[in-house]
Image 1 (cartoon, rainbow, N blue to C red):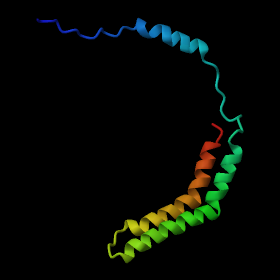
Image 2 (spheres, rainbow, N blue to C red):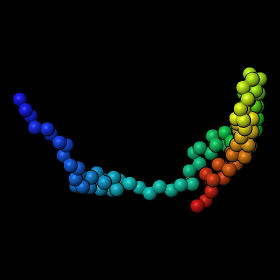
Image 3 (cartoon, rainbow, N blue to C red):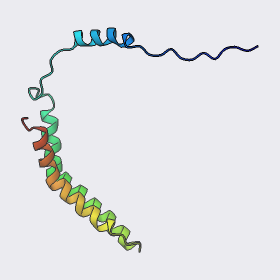
Image 4 (cartoon, rainbow, N blue to C red):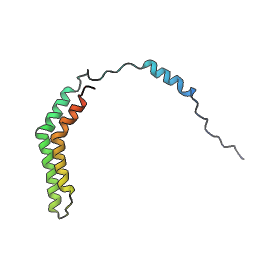
Length: 104
């Protein structure tokens, strides 16, 4: 009982034309920058990271590095990671916020 091997049908361009036309017909214009839905959440999150939240994150990262040093295994990452976290929390939030809110 030999059955011939069924190969999949080659995809043709016409198979994509109708869905593309429907998608283009239903698409509307999108405008960025006019919506203020998430502004309250952005302000709270930014204030948290720039204020006490950022300090807590930095101190916890530093504590993790000190615990690693106390355990007897020294790596440069135990010093560099807390410093990087502190710099990232201190300066990263304003940089990201300015990039996101930039007018292009």
